[in-house]
Image 1 (cartoon, chains in turn yellow, cyan):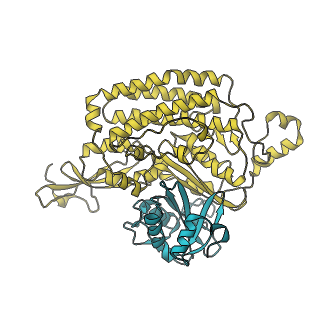
Image 2: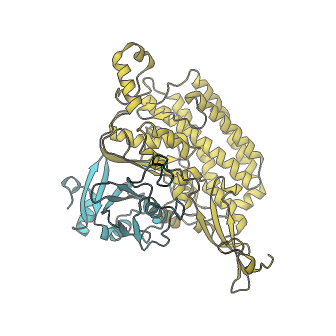
Image 3: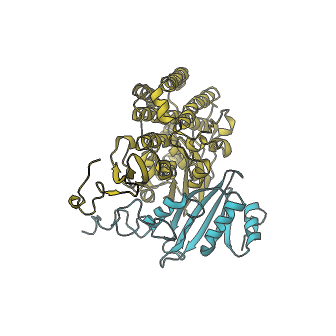
Length: 411
Length: 162
């Protein structure tokens, strides 16, 4: 590092300040981001470096803050579903589900089995999609490019399925209060089955590509360690904490949407390094495929939305023939529906960890307050602990292993 | 005082036995337990819940603005015990005149950003917080956007009053 004359550094401009450390080394403050390619979003991290060792790391978030919680108070209960898609654009189904569950709890409506199973199927497809994007970009950060193309190929297949179900690729809003938005399209069994059939070989392919790659192994094994106590103290959830040896998955411990009827394993590793987080997510993709298969095989017949005329939109046919249905449709679309006063919270396992919406109703057709407990926000808090005392080159691997989405952090 | 329907439940009863004055109210709706706690005792209660009743995780901290009611702010703590597989909601009620409460970052390090967010968006001060500054909004932002009396379009950029 060249000596920098401190008199030439503008006041308040901290990126180039260097100062001597007691051992004779030099301290440098470096801004990583806000547009660093490895953060995959707008995140600024202030790094204090001693040579290549990170002394201090301070994340600076808020660049993407869109005020979704404030906006939610101006929309009807049903309209808020569309906002949840935009928070975490990689796991939109889990977000939709996490939002509708507490509202349905407040409304006290019964969701038919078919809707529950469709929700499980699409949430798990969403998990495979999210993990595939994570795996591809994480491998790309570490210099392995092929996996990125393969993962995005699978992602494309899942987005096509989403488009088939909801008419939308990313902002699906498919899960609605009282069921799902649309009847499953004709031929969906074949399309989903075709995708699932080839999936396990593709996951094996990712594993072979990376597990036999010495660069990937050296950059991930024994890198980015954090103890389980520390992770629990910070409140980290999801694959990161399962890679540290805690067998805790909300789908198992507090089942929602009939997850208790599905047979799957929770992958747990003990090393708590970047490599074990990779193993956990890879294994989760396999388990998700297993759940999807079960959901396909055992899909119940019947209605795909609840029998709650004041909440759920009527069928098109009924609207054309029955005055009553037309009135309900008009009422729901123009002013929404009233939700009884109360507060409810339902935790859901998103690909990133615990997502939950704390819905507060004052009895009107708009939410009084919706608190969005997003996993990325909670997980990103461990960044300082993960970085400090480590090499700057390892920080990229550690950052990627956290798998956060900045829209999910800032909301 | 603990409401009657909570007296039989393990966690509220344990808190009641530990200190009978600390819980000022509560409810049990939709299978979720909510306890109102004296604001000045929140750290002690959290410490007790973490060490004695195994609530090892803090899931989140947020605030509900009941404007224009008094006390206006309700700071909400979502607690979770993996060992007991149980969740608990704690609330403290704060008046609109300079709302402030002790920080629970000493109990769970993870309270850090959640309290900063509540400070930023609601203007509730947390004493003994290690780094209490704005998190989401710019440093020079005026007002606290999630308060009910803050307009949706923002004070400065409102095009209705021009």
